[in-house]
Length: 103
Length: 388
Image (cartoon, rainbow over all chains, first blue to last red; front, top):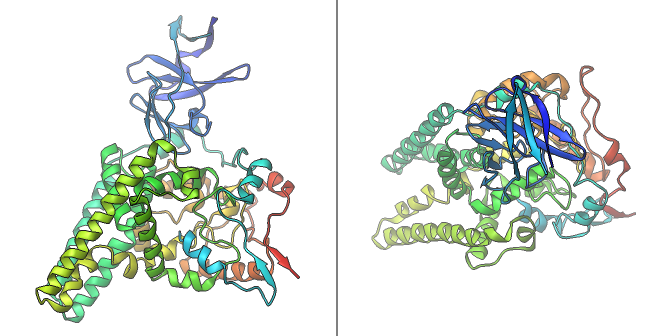
């Protein structure tokens, strides 16, 4: 269990997402319209497509393949074809860096 | 596109005097298992490189264009329907009904499609309302077809996985010609809706629809069937009331357009994948982009840019021209007209009838990345069996 340095806060535009990998795990890290940073599992729960290629609208991330929609703050699946929620992870900002906590 | 119709027709197709066994296009047969074991279903599809900022701009949602187009669409419904009724018995009425048929029986396909993807409007409920209206017009269960189209995008033209393959081999050109008048397709669609309304789902539907959605499948099928029953009752009432031929008006308004006005969506739809490859993981090999006139593009909501749509399905219809400009140097040259595209499809399909396994591989421009062919070249042939 540890905090991991992901990137500079400037690397992610507001209302956008990037992919961040560690080992064999992949995550999606978001810069919300409220200025906060959020982190979820990186793959859509429907067909395992990388969410980093999707569209961020307000507090929602849309899968680039099938239009499945999640609230990236809670991981909640909002629209078919996604039925399973995303895992979410704690984040914080320190000295201009985005950190996420992974168990 | 007409899977059930094709199944029926293909059973009787002959192949130059030889016996011919149709491919297994069902989702629960040998082809389905083969697609999984060969790795086709797990493979990553080819995508042209588009910078993230550009793609974000292209994917951006707006309500404006679709609200404008929907107001025009609804207005055209009213104008042509009222014209058809007001001028009943004259040539003007005939012209009005022919136009109404296309507006109600063809345009619904593109509205169903775009709203199903959730890309037409930014506002979610607007997508949902138009999606349900268009699904009804085109006689598709809105739940089944949402899931079948998801599968179509996941496993585009992969035999045994894609429930929306329009050109099943061996191809019956007679079935294709008949689909321009949607009598058989409408009958098949109504049969499916009636089965769903009775609580039955086919093995294919069970394969691609999650169990949690079954109650919705049944509910919406019943809603659709109830509207058709009311339409029939009104028409019967008009007949009893002595209104003669005017008693067909309810059917000209509801249900009928899927028969007499579907030709435009069939015409554009058959070009999407006809004569192209099956079982590949590069949309440039299995989809076709065709330049079309402005009217057809409006009716079809720019889905003539079909390679682009499959490669980036989250780009709204109003951004398709810009997407085309961005990636066109990585794509085969588009067909310059509907006519040219049909000639190409016809030649390819005729060759496929004599040469099972053949598909049209279009030349790429020098600026393009090569086709992603390594996987499908390694896959054992799954072609039509011919007893020579």
